Length: 268
Image (cartoon, one colour):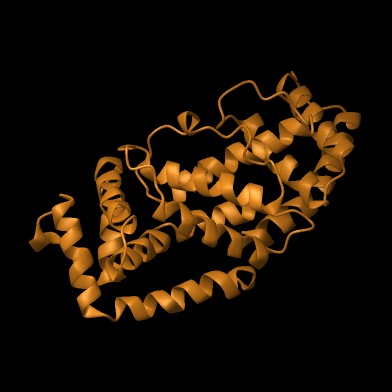
């Protein structure tokens, strides 16, 4: 795990190792998985770390049942509620890392944002809307995003909607990628970098997401971001070899994007 994630998420990992060392806790969570019809008891790993990984890989329908089983218990009181909430948090760590990255700005340090995101996820897990039987991971992450955005004093989550995310097979990473991507695209739109009217996974949407992030981080001037989008559109319609002027514009765009890519890799 990189240095930018060391304090908060490394702390969670260390705490999780202690939870996993408790055989009684592992047995309790294993019973919950059986009751949620994740798999037959004989198929389930006995170790808690392996059990969570197994449940995450069982597909969207099983993942929804598994998370709901945990969230129903997290809504109660006592040690079992605390255990259930802790398992939910650990299952969502990859998603929380992605959300933390997407909420960064030049004025926000990674660990400060991560602390808010983790605290908000705990709160959401304990008060989850249990009438939701599908897209459970998406709901968890979006509710966390909305709470964290308000606590951080921003409005980043304003146009990210649950229905835009579709069904996914992962309980953490894929959902968070789509939430973070939608959020970054909205930032690009807010800066009026490009008019993204196609699907969220189009190449232009990917570009606007990256450029919006670069503008937010202060490593790309807004006028350069808009010029890059204009250049890409011009290149898409080009017939024949590029002119010397076009090659010069292309080289300039690559020079502008290089520091953005470096910062993106550092944040990841």
